[in-house]
Image (tube, rainbow, N blue to C red; front, side, top):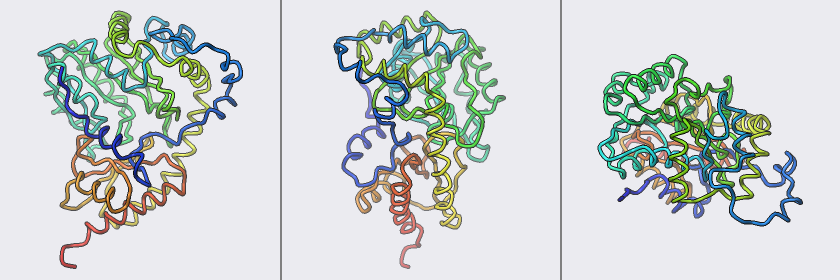
Length: 374
């Protein structure tokens, strides 16, 4: 199985710890262990826990805790993973075979562009359109999701636009998947990171062919514990467990216990995330307005990132490389999330960090906005 380089992750892993300002992040400033102790994690008790292997599909206690979030589920409908990225990987690895068709919503976190292709599947895309409020281009969707399509992937709330699908759009997507016999993977890791709108509706329960992936990294603000999960049909989850035993075997034992505390306190985590993002959205709004139309965006409804369109004849990867070299600031090019001419910019940091990071980005944007020779 040969897999292509995951451009965005390679760029981030290469430079994120070397630049002065990392504006390529995608979650909020993380919680500390001290804050988790305040939520009920018994660190003193855990100091005496032997650090052996944990349950390979997640402890029964954690899976039962997760089952309280998703109506109609039991512990057997969950596979706990090392982050949401492993959840997505396991879902694809367990189901896709050579010759299958996989449909991917773009722009997106492009992990499930490369994985299906490495398994011999044909990857098709359908766009979300800015001029339609980031709703799908339905003609492209119908072409991408047809007979022979094995799986469809969406992220909702979306990474990188921060948009949330309408109820009508969700219903249309599910009905199409059912009609062609495709599984729908809904990556809901940003559910709970809404800024000024009601909680995002989950795809869970809309069809027997829906698979939901999620985790603690984004809305919860706890990426470092590397806990994610898959919830889906029991037979599909059993296949994911089989694959998991061959890859990472089990989650970290301490992380599993932290996850139980975090899930029980999810509303507290979500409220912290909302407070941070509400303040930062105002900062970003003022910053975008300062470019007098050179920048265009639809404000994110959820999540700690904004997808911003710029009006200049320079590729996004080249522009972001200028920012890294000249400003020691890392930004994700739109080309790496499936939409050229855009920048994916972090909104989840502390105020002082955000303002300086945006200022540095602005220096290079203004430079490319000035016509040559002036």
